[in-house]
Length: 560
Image 1 (cartoon, rainbow, N blue to C red):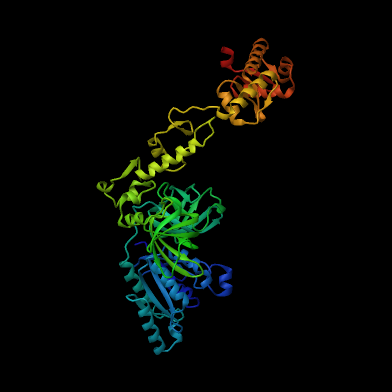
Image 2: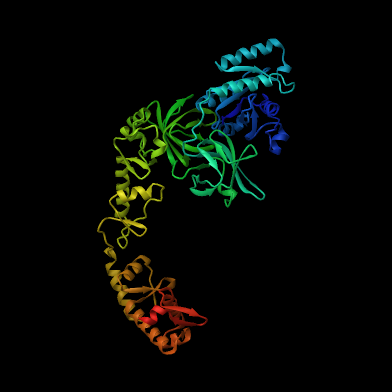
């Protein structure tokens, strides 16, 4: 069983003291936390249950200023441990934390009444009644971290709740949201987080999204213990050799390559605690990341969230919406939707209609819940599935970009996406080298015809003296047409002049075995710089090679 339990509750209600009593570990690791006596950031500890199982425990801050840190920790938990001071009862952050847990879909947990040693029986009974009303169905355990009262009962209650939690899927694609990044001497950069799905082991190659950097796993630990593979639901520390600490931060995700899109849009079903009007800008919490975004409503229940930074999401993920307080949340219907908020499409998504679900390419194995007979209206290329409508949009987008391309090279780079290798060949475009073209298209001068003719005349007049060409695209086109030869520094000579210099060099080398820059300059009757640029071009063309201060012909040039 690999599950994570997270604390929740108001500041000073004894969350960290209770965690220390349960686990023997102080989760307040920052000097500022120890000086001020309050939790500021997330803390972690292993929690051993009476039957020998081990849970991962996340301790969250209770102060209202650090609710964003609480959300980052709560998004990865399976069980909650709601902590309420028996003397104070529920307070503002008790209610807000509980609302966040509900928005995140965390249904199972236990309520701990703390500081029982400091109140009388009547106060304790009132606190118990309030807790039972606040969290119906949850077991309420009276505890004291100071005396040890109720700790064994609390461990047993958590074990009972753990039995009712559905285990996360190890077969799903790997995804770990980063909540800490640090370096260790002799190891390098280490990231920690809760493994949402899949597994991670030594030698795995993953992508750090949303940046797209490829990373290789050197080693994996679960609560300071080396493991061969970590499973979904565990707290994991991953060593990443060769990765600079500054390239990763809280909110990034380590994912199986190609399995999860990094998107600036999310289609969601809303669950609101307060009104969120169309167009409102607020903070969107997803995974351990916090995004600034705008809400585009699509009726009462649906919205598209347009984000300022990309989210690494999957269908079914939970999000929390906050401004100065928690306003609501929801779950993701489409992690990479088209840029329109169509209520009808949202309805199709919620019903699980495949054509709406896979507008953009997704790995086929991520749709294991769809059987082949339900894939009507979809296309497949390699391991990717996508809708016909998306394919048409992609083709139209590329054709529009080609129409705007320079007529001297009327092509565009293909998409640099994991699905491109499989999907691009189906677009009906021609691939030439690293660019895509309309079938049968060819480069033309277009409006540059007069400029090309003028440049050719100037090159003829200049002979062996290179000219500066201010239009590099035009120079490349004329070179492909055999009208000129480009040299360094944006200079060029006409093709006849280049051929003349080439024959002169070959003749000299065949007679004397080699040629120096000074000799070549004298034979050309030009300055040193033109002669040097021509020799460098001959080297690049494979005609000559440099030996000390001389050039000699390469073997193939000697044979010609």
